[in-house]
Image (cartoon, rainbow, N blue to C red; front, side, top):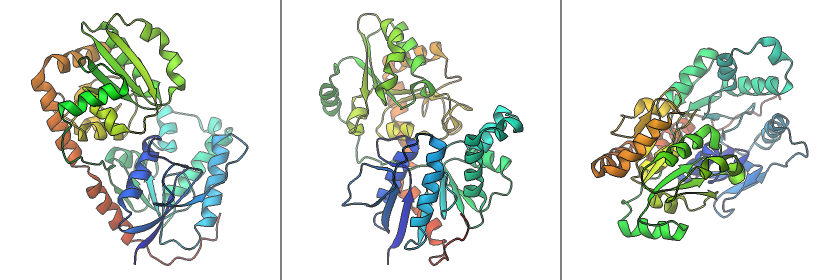
Length: 379
């Protein structure tokens, strides 16, 4: 008999952020082993594949109030009928909790925020309460996407109960894109096949380092076209930087792209000079498609500690290293050997994080959850 699995996430979307995409990918990988019900406020997947329970949206737009509402509502609809409740959100309940970002407790400690300021903020108090209930309640099993986030959380929450580290998975394609496929992908997206094409993927342009990429592109002595994928509402903030481009250089804000494999096929490399990332899925996705990657090292990108500079990826020491980005893009443009090395080694790195590996680890965690539980009495 298949496991009855409830997935909790406010936005169940493959084209959402990293956590949202992670929830969809894991749920898809688990379809053979589980009957899956998604409980969310937004849902853009096929109802023929996943059962869906809609969480009503409040008229109040405050995110922290909505988070409390989401926790309260989902607790009641999961009291019975499910063997495992797996949450990607800050909620008070659930058997398995995937933690994909820095915790609020750790963030506030690192910022050195005074306790009186926290006490005067209903928003912070709500997040801290939800997070403590989520991660420190007996019977909850926390799953961290990296060892760094696990250790960081354990430092601020020494009472953390059972936990595991399971990095996100990635789909591994059967083969590499051919030159004809890459040319066709560029033409389909409106790019010139003969010009170096650099991809940038992320909804928070500032956090992911778009400014560094654009400043570097303006200094390059060769033609370049930049493909920016993500929420286009921030595009106007970068008009001045794009205006510095000379002839032969272009930047297109593509918005949200549903066919990401085609977008990766169009790229010569992916630039991701992030200011803060735990285990960025976009890097794994690009590497799995044999796309060379430029990103930042620790502590800005915790994945950087696992990568070898100029072998698996090109690592920048800081997110604002414009000259380093200029050098990295130039090296990839000029050196066929480097491009092949980065593509091949990056692919081998991504293979270690396939969904087959991640799925087996999660399913082992699910199997340890008692299948019959009394509904919790507290709220």
